[in-house]
Image (cartoon, rainbow, N blue to C red; front, side, top):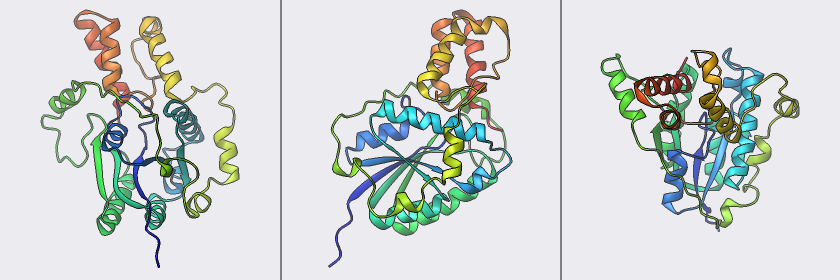
Length: 265
């Protein structure tokens, strides 16, 4: 007699390494069902020329900060996303996956196409939220700027997290998925290596960096190229900038800071 799989929803975090103004996390909490938060280091993405140890270390540090802020584990895997999800679906009855829609290189688009096919075949509803003003799949830039401002003008999402936990949300995952997709030892050493001369990751530090920029550091330069995009949402930056600076100039600068956070290469 086959045992019934335990139910579980999944929040798949990618570049959205924060706990505030986070639509997938808010939706998972609102559903009131057990869920796990996962992050996947994908070897095909790691090997791409636009990825470096610095990016990976920043992500790792941000994940560790998220765990502390959420007071729950973030399950981290090393493997291709399709294989990881297939393994999770073998041991859990997953009905919903929540994530932001990624906009980036062709590999990520093809990956998401394969993931969508897997979910459709396995009866999983994948709810993707727009991450910023970048729209995936558009054929031209007509009214792109207007739609960008519509997105940036949306109210902040007030994330609230329950203190109680379902059994599925605590302890190790079932089956061998954690061991099968464990981070290799050599890569783990790279992720945990000291970040000498580099900006540290994590939402907690991101807020400190942003407030320092708004209160003082903006006076010394006009271009905001040193602000990272992963730990704060573009809307949060606009709101915080508007608080600090008044008048049309303030809104212009806040807009430019948000653009630097949300720019896609």
